[in-house]
Image (cartoon, rainbow, N blue to C red; front, side, top):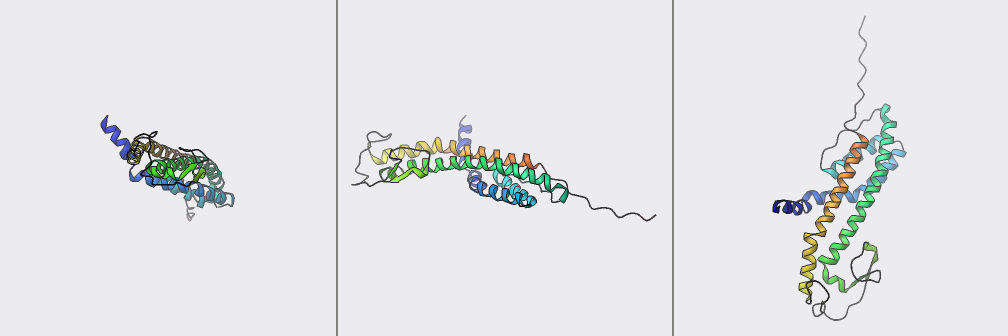
Length: 208
């Protein structure tokens, strides 16, 4: 049981997770570029971009893409489907990452709550765009936090809020990102298929 819990945290904060976050951020613009390329008749190039994206999202090497003229229309259709579906998954990933960033900011940086408000309400919201700066008079260290977990001192409230999110909600959200990137990468592999067959060159005719 202890090993499972430790593995849950270790994988969530591992290098692979941060790499996937980078690819999750890049996924939406890559899908848009692939969509434009496919519509412009550059399906082979778009498919290569998508396979590279799938490799980064899943951490597994991707196969090659067919470049033969006979496969162009089929590849274009697959790229279009993969780009549209990938764009939808990418936007969901962006929403999760945005909430993760806001959640971490307001808890790991607990003293910042004295200077920020969210849509006229204090507390945690789902959007970074709702953050507003507010003025604070006096020292934040002299303020009391009787209604906060870990209060009434700032140091106690800060430690409890930061500690709780680091062992609970942040790794859960990181696992959600890992799941979404795995889904996205698997979708690309499914739509584009495995290593595409290449056209064999014609054999020269034998002399009679």
